[in-house]
Length: 400
Image (cartoon, rainbow, N blue to C red):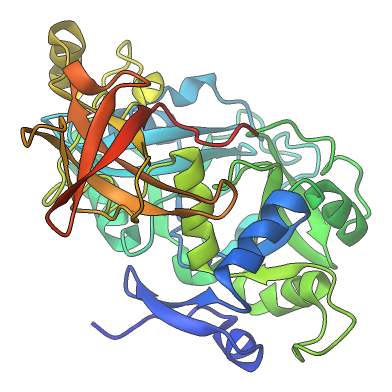
């Protein structure tokens, strides 16, 4: 598969980024160093290009029904400008992906990013003259899943005879994540509209950021305060430049540290956030929301695909559960390493692992038997054939 390039690829290359393939996209893994970029987000502010994330727009009379059938949370709880985290499951309750669902202002038709933003009223109400306007949503699948999820939505709509428009608009949108304790100041400087920094967590609004009409949400994947800015892909260079300044790495104009996927991974691991395709995967790591410790996104009073299987699992319990481990001996845990009870009996395995830049300690994430999944339980991680002492931690590892 040919790598997809984000619209800022040339700017990243000029800034000296190193790249990696992620979900079929050629994305920057680091600009300066993972440790430096990680520290910037924890201590001040950093900006990530996350344009590899998908964007699928859903609108029309039955848009709410369609969204509620294919995501585990309850979108009827969302008012325009609200968002929620959800899982996307198959009939067995196994997660195909996780996503954030945004409720757009009513009356917006699915289409290109520019057309969508042009139809968004600043007060998030229906556009004038729409009357009883149809609901509209934007949901964000993980990298490389946009086509799969757009097809899933379209097929279900057709089979169920629902009246909704589904549009894979990933190539039309770009997304930047401004994250860190100083993120509100950065957004305040970049937009003249006070309502952006007044947003609560998981709220979104329409605003001009660096002169570009954007959909701005107080969301993120780092555990820090922050915002995700979605704008038309052909205008994202102006927004990026407003944050990081000149492309010259020696420039004194840059105000925000550019960050790559390496720091994004260490930051999310410290928080215990799931990584699709690694901490769960329908083929290689099939897991349900209850096993993955995100049962809070499962609303069993809705009729979503996989509901019955998850109701049974909630009643019967799970055999393994997602936890963190902190290594007490020297070594770095990695995905795929076995976890034992310290006496060579395997009790689970890791799916992610790193040396925590914040703590200076080796940490990992994975699935252990329920009997060993309580905080403080002593376990071992097998590294190069040796059992390394560790203890179970219920994420997050860092208190934000």
